[in-house]
Length: 84
Image (cartoon, rainbow, N blue to C red):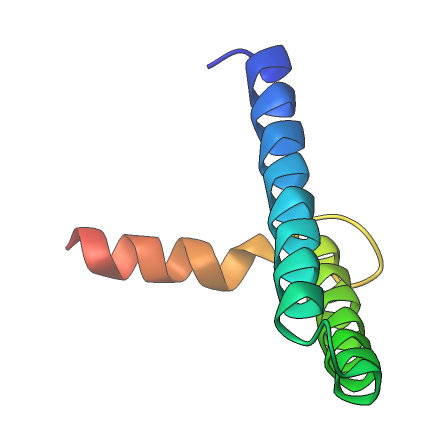
């Protein structure tokens, strides 16, 4: 698969994850429409959890580069062992 196709796939996945988050927030807001206190609490908890999850996923999007990197050596050893 060419690099440009992979880049569009990655962008599409991120866009879909963000759309899912927005739809979930709308759903939570509609469920608690008549009670503003629980609505604010539920939306706050979900928003914080969603942002934290996106951050963790984003850190591992490219695991072999960046500040938090995984070395390829141990993975190559596992691949050799599994191929036997």
